[in-house]
Length: 173
Image (cartoon, rainbow, N blue to C red):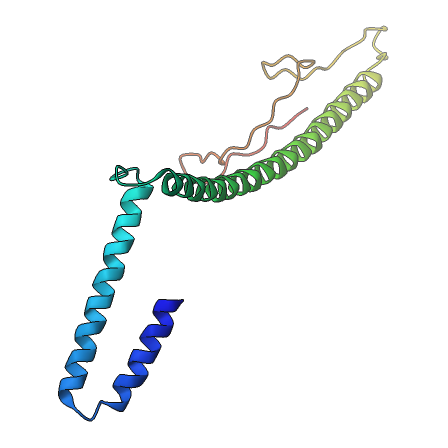
């Protein structure tokens, strides 16, 4: 803060002397010198933070440096923890959405299985006794799959025939 006030006072003084071109040159020379000195201090502090050139520091200076590094580390850890917490929250939200979708799909599969079972029962009841001598004919759907096995559904692209049209749905009956 002192440096800023000193610079302000110097600038104020120099503005009064801007009539003289030599004063302006001196002003910029002092400004360059001040900026070089600030750069040197910043570079020195940076090296200290990296653990370099610590041999000339006293115990008090080293303790202050250690406290500064610990405060910086706490800030870094806090930011990292916040980012990880946000990512975990987002992954939990996505997991819940996937779980809900899975439950809905499971309900749909169960409904389809129930409808299929009912269709099978209706089909068996409609084909009970025949008037031709008491012979029962049973009609079953055979498509090469076990009818009582669990149904696994998956999405796929429609297949096209050679003429470019979609294949028709399998006809039952």
